[in-house]
Image 1 (cartoon, helix red, strand yellow):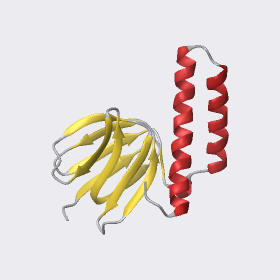
Image 2 (cartoon, helix red, strand yellow):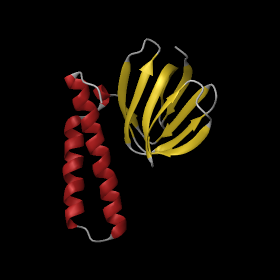
Image 3 (tube, one colour):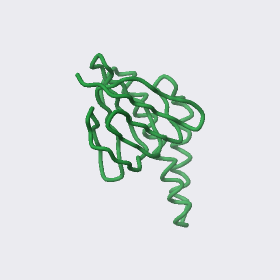
Length: 140
């Protein structure tokens, strides 16, 4: 297996740094898989599930928010606002955030406020999805 270095940074910590086989994540135009030797590019990343295949071939999922992805010949760097492993997700807090976002969406008319509420709802839903998949031992 060909390996390359993946780094995932948030403003608060180095979330992940290790050699990996593959990474799968959502860009604005769909999901992408990155393996060693991928053509270099830079792209915006959407809130969603980050899937990482480690050097032993095992997959692990994490929640990430929007950010920027940079792929070079030997290294991939992901800069995001937030990243969380399933065991770090506070499900009760995510459920409350989801409920609040749904209530805000139902009550709002201003476009800017609706977009903000949609983003909050999306974050809560993906946090809950990552946590639930981890508890079930399933794959995304």
